[in-house]
Image 1 (cartoon, rainbow, N blue to C red):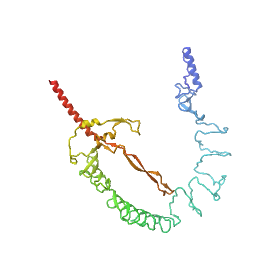
Image 2: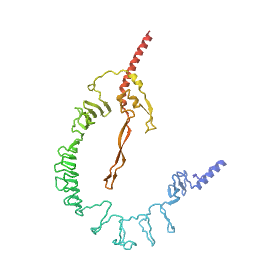
Image 3: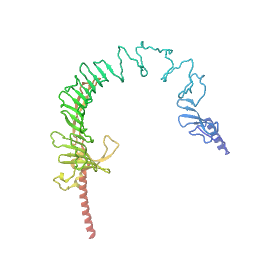
Image 4: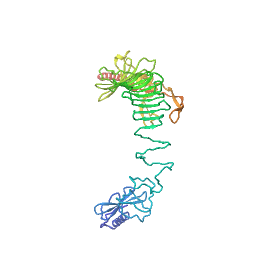
Length: 479
């Protein structure tokens, strides 16, 4: 690949021979290169070899005009704007779409296409097409390549219409009135398995009751396994789940008409969660007051007991006051922690008010305890490429036990699925899953912030010792 200015300069013989060789190389390679020759002449060809598909240009004295592309991988040449006659070519090929330029394709031969023919219209009724007839009665497996336009005609017959996709009907649909009924006049859809049981009832028969019922017996009574979405005629909107009993033995989600609260109920009609009209979320409580009396209202509050034997509630409450957002963690007796957020900072707080504490004494012997700590460098098994600094929890547990959770080498049991449940095609359980019990490690954890008081106390002891030594040095230097 070479290019040349096609001028042999006056020069010594070795340079002249090299110049002639370069000229011959440019001629042999048709001025190939990744850009146009620096010196060009009208009528000159050159090849752009930037990619594996080369481009052949001819220079007209001003511009480079693309002549053809050469695919070096497929070993093909495609001419640009070619007006060549392909009549004598027995295997003509196109490098792109064929533009008819408003002309027709005519001839007495055949057009054989293995792909798809797309056309907006056909001329004629098709009667002259070989292999295509106007009547498909004798075809036992007729197929459509597109939508079927009935042109106001009906599909009639005693057979079945089997559709695996979606059927869209704009008018009334009646299929065996004992099974499926779409009644557009009464705005009602019903499905029943045997008269008069309805398994699905969607109705809008009045202005006060708009209901979706899924149940088992006639009328969808409260003794059924039932799902009801309705406004109930009471001004409330609700999703209700009833089973075998009175209306009080139900789980439901309801929006009250008066307060526009979204409420979540469990069996026994007990409210367990609420989202009120202002966006406050409450779980196991309806108290919207924030922890701080000066706050602007809680946006989230959750509470509950860790076990039946514990009478103290553990509460997480999120509220927003004039300074920003605060997350409070409480137990009976007061706040035990909080996360506060302002426009400029985030603080993670452990309750430290003196009114929450008793038996307060100064810490002593901190330096001796600090010397027992043994910091380590290590990597976690799941991240072999990252080395970190830290402690081994069991080594710290005897020195700062309040910083450690769990016990060394502790194990816990967990339930796991040995054999998965077997389901039928409709998702019903045929065989229950077989469960097993296994032991897994119950890992220890460390709250390294709990080491800070020990570090501060040890530093204070060290500073006191430094001050004493400085005083002794000053005394000795004075003498």
